[in-house]
Length: 237
Image (spheres, rainbow, N blue to C red):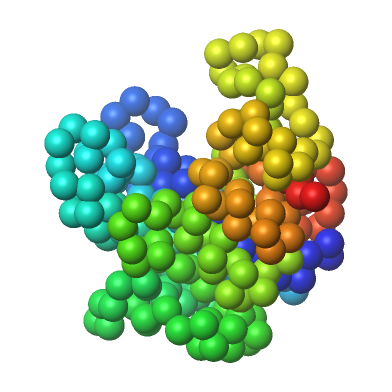
């Protein structure tokens, strides 16, 4: 395997179905993700997961409409816990031993985030889902993913998206958009490419943590990414 330990970053929207009127969490989508994760675990890759909550609630969007930003961000963190529990249920249904750790204590449903405990779970082959972001308002789940990746000593962050990689402009709006095979952290920041927020990319750059941006909707891409096959865009030095 190209990477021994991976932090997989999923958006909350990744759990939604494509059809109009679909539920905020589509069981078929979650089961498909679980199937790919099972293959990754069978390959011996150590895996942590961070998921957003945008399918349920977006703190930034709510605050822009007048809600207190701190309250809105905490609501967004709770949305990530709901998604994390949905993933845990699907993973365990697929035979993957899984733990959820939260940045906000809620002992009845998940463990608190403790770095050494998380490392021990990973060393035993368990998948660890990190919920509730950083536990602080004003920080995105992208930033939380970078922090957790560094804390568990991950080799790479795999950022799942709905497009094949990083483009010079929005490929949905511009058919002539060009995809990068590799791009530097500084170029991502200078060109204001929407890979992750600037804080997350800066943290990756300062700590030499690469980010692989790939299309989650193409079956098998998670396995291809961890095995080192050419997939998506690599953001690095």
